[in-house]
Length: 277
Image (cartoon, rainbow, N blue to C red):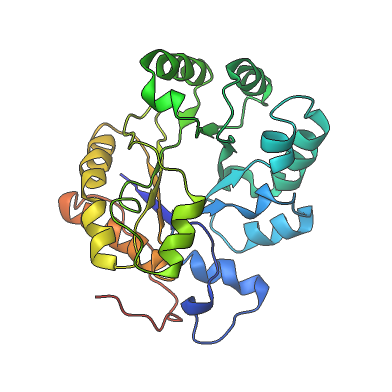
């Protein structure tokens, strides 16, 4: 029984007492968490040699959830994307089984299920897909929800929820919370898994206690998934993400309190000067 947890990045200025060289930053992070969101690939397809370095710094069972480039999802809106997709898949191929899922984050105006269906049907069969939608219709209209779920289930693809309900539960109390609220989607919480591999993105607040209190419903959901034999991945976000790495481990620890058979996380390399609790 294994739970994967992680953050939106693998390096942060407040995570080390002294800066680490690029070839060691991911290795250090991977001693704290066993998964990471690949957000940087949204902005540019990495060089293959860079991805080879990521593979060298992580164990084979570490999970990367890699975001498709914005040229694919936002600029071309999944149409006429063969060249961009081929270049992207070639670049990330060195990850091997570490590549847990291709993360298809769609723009808030996107409702074109025909284009999404075409992309999912034409992915090479060894890739797992996970889709994050942000148009309100998929959360508010039961017919649209069912149509999207049917598309995803036909492709054995997961629906990634981004739970920002705690972020928006009260007015911002800092500049970081204000900026996060201006950028993140305000959508209902969704807790239904479609596949064996559910993925959750959870966004908290500056205050760790508020963040922890807000994820309590997810503990019940993730516990149920684990008992059902699913293999979930949970990513913890905070407004400035300085505490997200420690909080991700705390989320895992709370699940281990409920499920002692849950595999432990690795022992961290001692480079973190922060203490939350």
